[in-house]
Amino acid sequence: MRRIRYSGDTVLLGDEAADALMDYAARLARDDSAVSLAIRAIDDRGVENAVDILVGPATMMTATHVESDLPEPDNSAMVAELARRFSLLDAPPPVQASEPQPEQFDEY
Figure 1 (tube, helix red, strand yellow):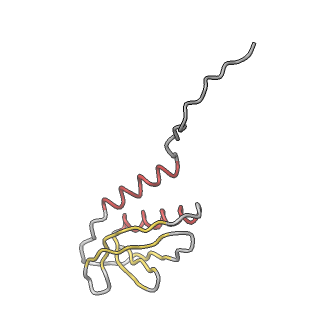
Figure 2: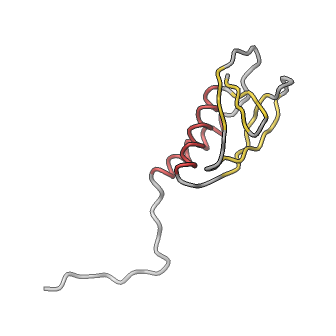
């Protein structure tokens, strides 16, 4: 598991979720963009809770490996969603023109 330090607070996330979060935060910072993400995390009392994290260019976050006997929160949906978003950032879908464009022919 990883201890995520963010905005003066710490939570525990599973390794895969923490890696996805850190990678996505770095990509958003590079693209000068921000999003709010909902994740499942374990707080400092060992209780699993829903956490909303704002991730963007000014995000200051660290992830430290920790040993824990607690079960990892299920963030499989969030990890899949971040993978989908990454693929859209890398290869955005084509944009359809709002009006049909006239055919153009080479002039001879």
